[in-house]
Length: 450
Image (cartoon, rainbow, N blue to C red; front, top):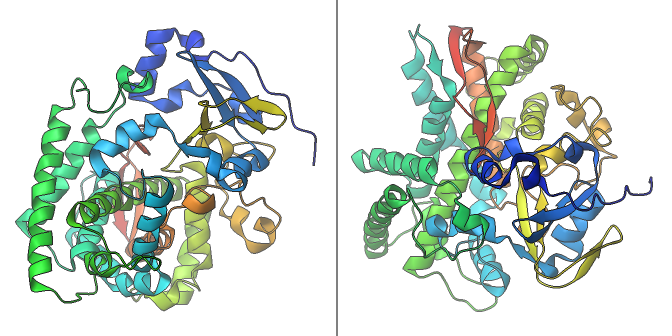
């Protein structure tokens, strides 16, 4: 392999915009702080608001942080400031022994056998949405539709039922949390999360109401007992194989909130970008339809079909390359280290922009081109496993990866068999980096029945 490029020292990114402009951009769209140098550099180093900051854009360096020496790196304070108020100390935010215990207890809920049992629910939710689309002639935002769909899926798989009016309220409250949860200057400079943030009152109220709903459901479920085959039953039944302990109500609440946040927003955004890409690449859409016709023949997809829907999977994998919902991974060094021959001091911030990594021209030729064939087995075989990180990597790789992939493939296969989409003229599709990567103003389309 080629020798690594040198680090770019003294990269004071905030100085390129001015301090307050940098803070504004970070709050409103983190993609807007990504400068051209980042895409073809392997390692960048500088200071942000006095904090030493390293940006990694090379698989070996990323593997070192996320896997080889992962004990030296914890979740970054910036992401914690956004996530802890919502998900508490769940799998997404906890560290060390607490994280390992939570992960062991939750693992059965996301085992491939459990995911297989949820596929019928995913298909039924999608079929219900499609029934509402019949006869629709007006333009609509398919990104909003995907959000409603994935919320319905996660509600039904979590609680094994439609919660009726309460389910609708849960969806409204989650929308409020996601819309309100933006970084502030206090987050950037490391002020503790308990210090009130401007504009966060609506989010705190939404979280409080969500907590009451979850507690009512938990109390009812513990009182009735029994295994309903849903995610909540699996979480309540889960035991740490080393200690035999389960989760208390607060810990279950944190995992429920984690699954709701990570289990619908990310998949919905990725699906929205998938429909955008298919609408603008008719040759890819034609090949997708050919596979769906050959494998499914017009019937709804089932779990057994997923292994045969190879091109469908490749379409979604390439979508995740171009538009990874988890577009950045943050870590903080707990001790001094060396990456690529550069000293990383204790306390330094590490950022891996998956959005940038997936566009590194040394790793991905013609990186802006939508080409699902990149994920054909013969082309993917020699690729470094840390060159593609839509679900993270190392011990903290997303536990819900299998769930998300199954859901996305079921949705794509179900919808694409019934409808073809065209973008509405004058409605551009622009990614924006907030808590997740999402289409800024949605993805507006018209639908034609196939």
